Picture 1 (cartoon, rainbow, N blue to C red):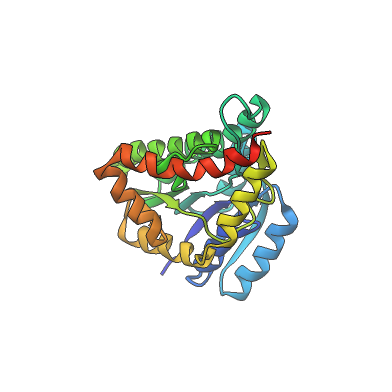
Picture 2 (tube, one colour):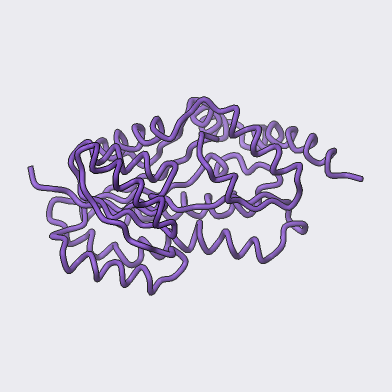
Length: 271
């Protein structure tokens, strides 16, 4: 079997690291792309211990020129690109009108434009792969339930889902699969690096994150299965699948149900 090659953004920790290790067990060669080079080096050690190999690539996903430079560097040594994983992302909490526009721009640049840039710069290289290829875009259950107090995050992740759905149709003639990953809260460090308009919103996010029994390794396993089976959607854990189905049956009812949680946060923030 010929060696396969993948780019993973946000590879320095969390889901990016877990997916890198899972692919390494299959013998893949990986470009571990992140702004956290030290984290990527740690991931590379885990990748090699798992049976794969790779390289650390410093990448600011908000810079299209950085994406273009990465593509040219890799094309000079790689025979093909088999998989693009747009996983880099940040969390932001705050209601519309309260959250600063600076924080809006920050999250849109990373969570949405970062994915757009990745797909835009790499899609022709993926199309050139005679064996076919795959794109994985990390979205969130937030794109489905649109929880209050998370507008900026919801918007970026809904955009990632829509982009993935569009690419699914555009790329089928080229034998390129697309997967949009929509997990609920799972154990990662996204809250640590996130921005929140109020302390109560950070407290609520930490509570939901710490209470989750789902791990990055479990999400990564679901993603690999989706790649193998060319599935468009990954919803994990079971709660995410439940809300995914319920939203299709009673969309307004789900929004009313989710909004009840916001009452607790709003009460803490009021003087």
